Amino acid sequence: MKETARQARAESRIIGLVPTMGALHAGHLSLVARARQDCDPVIASIFVNPKQFSPHEDFAKYPRTLEKDSEQLASAGVAGLFLPEAVEMYPPGFSTYVNVDGLSERLEGRTRPGHFRGVTTVVLKLLEIVQPDFAYFGRKDAQQAQLITVMARDLNLDAQIILGPIIRESDGLAMSSRNVYLTPQERTAAAVLYRALAAAKEELRQGTRDALQLQDTLRRILASEPLARIDYAEIVDAQSFEPVVRVSRPCYVLLAVYLGKTRLIDNMLIEPRQAGSDDLIFHL
Image 1 (cartoon, rainbow, N blue to C red):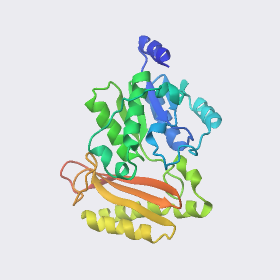
Image 2: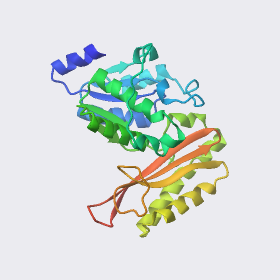
Image 3: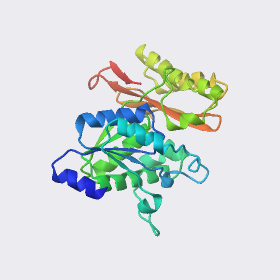
Image 4: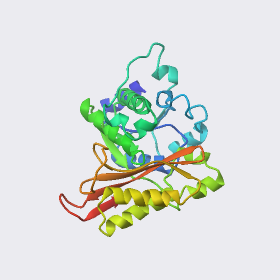
């Protein structure tokens, strides 16, 4: 992989990287399509990273569909597919990790201790191996995307981090590799996440800016679904991911909800149309 990337750089080509854990869906492929607009070659990686799973999580059963994934990536125009083994990424005696202090401990980090240390470590390794000009990540994992952006800035990495929009099913459910875990009843119930975000969006459009009032709406909608169990429903600053009292600057509405044993996350980004403006733009 390093030699392939070196050759592309020697030819002054612009390299794009789309890192994935496989079990690909339209969200991943939208990132490939965006990368192909900017880059040639586009490299995709598939690596189910053991360092970002805690012992009680789903590493062993995480969906692995390599043959189907490879066919989809080839059809999408990916020039190369990087498939490292765990022993290559983490050789015996591996002991070096990357951690973004503060941001790694909030929200997802609170629920999944050590998760983000594994994410930032593997992403840095992938960026070092491929050394792309641009690397593409989905905004569905909003906190992860912010952590990677901060890491790239803090460590003076050459790769520019590009975030792609959330891709949704027809009922609004954000596409995720973990959606395959849902039973038919849970899959139907999972649309409640989108309904909760849409309700918060409507309140914001009508002038509500109080974060606690918006959180009450989120929780009320989520609680109306008997199969849903709330982990968190919060309004946070889009940079620091600290809770906000009032929506007056770029913010995320963040949800984490259990449907049976499956934990789903979703979000909506809110931005003022211009600095100081009360007119908002919604990225749902």
